[in-house]
Amino acid sequence: MPDPRPHLGEPLALDLLNTRWIEHAPQDLLTDVTGLHTWLASAGLTDRATADEATLNAVLTARTAIYDVVVHASPAGLNDVLEHGRVRRALTASGPADLVDVPEQAWLPGWLAADNLLELLRTAPDRIRQCAHPECVLFFYDTSKNGTRRWHSMATCGNRTKAARHYARKP
Image 1 (cartoon, rainbow, N blue to C red):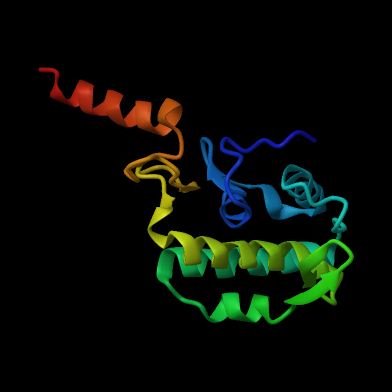
Image 2: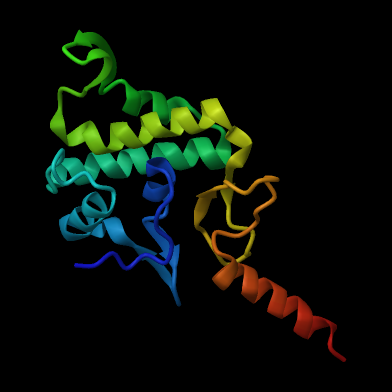
């Protein structure tokens, strides 16, 4: 099944948040294992994770935890997700390496998304944004030069907002 979401390509943590969107009504890609498989494929994780009920439950837990941090600045749930894995440092034949160690395979995708959120928070927390369109629930990482991006997509939400302002000014 092709990924039906209107906005792809964000960092893993925000991509997981964007598995919920509004298109005529609220949509959720992660209502079943088929949707999970679609997200895993889109995120490039099918070779590292299995689309099953245990993974779906873990990913949903991670999505809620990430949402709580991004929207409410509440870290408890994220820390619970992060407890399921760690980064192990090792010296390998190719040099020093950070190796992800998540003993319960079902937690790997959610743990990776939670870890990605930590990296986003570490580097530029003010660049994590929710689309400014009042009817949009999507998130993005602002990579614009001056950091003033407001919409997940100028072509959709930005254009709708500007068109609405234009028609509101017309007599």
